[in-house]
Length: 271
Image (cartoon, rainbow, N blue to C red; front, top):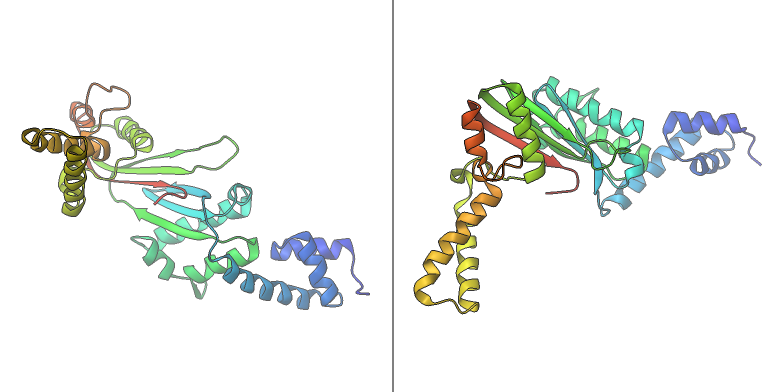
């Protein structure tokens, strides 16, 4: 029987982050050799990464610093609130800022400690024991207001918003960020909406009106009304304000002297 103690198991667990039972099995297989047990756990972790590729990552965290947002996803809320996972997200955010990454793809391809960020995330996935995904990263310049929102008090922020602006005040910009967190806009202005998305809305609206038996002469007006409703749902400046529903966001920001240049909204597990 392998010769090792509970203290050896704890030491191995602290060194690798692996589960207690996995550490015991590794030490048993390694006949108590600590270094060999570490190697066995690393091999197991690498194999498990492949098995985890098809798992869903609907939990995670959004972190923010200096006008940047980063979303790191995981499988369970248990990992989402783990100190190591939170520290990893914050480290990745720091790397993104230092390397001047522009999005998740450029961040994943950047170098850190002699490896890519993608390799770092994969290694941490093996160590932690869950599929981890660096889903999104955005960094803004100039005046930026950020807001982080928790879905539950015992979990880290799952929604993050950054608003780049000029004029107005920081309070007004942060209030807008809170609106964005709640209202889920996809675009700043209707000019940003892809033409194919508008065309799809028109087709759906027209077909729906016909199936509802609307008069032919009224269909054109109905279609325009439903397309405008689409804009009100997803275009930030055309949305009704969360705090003052009878006024649009544009009316609110214009009154505050705020010019919105761009924004980003990340929500864990959401496209």
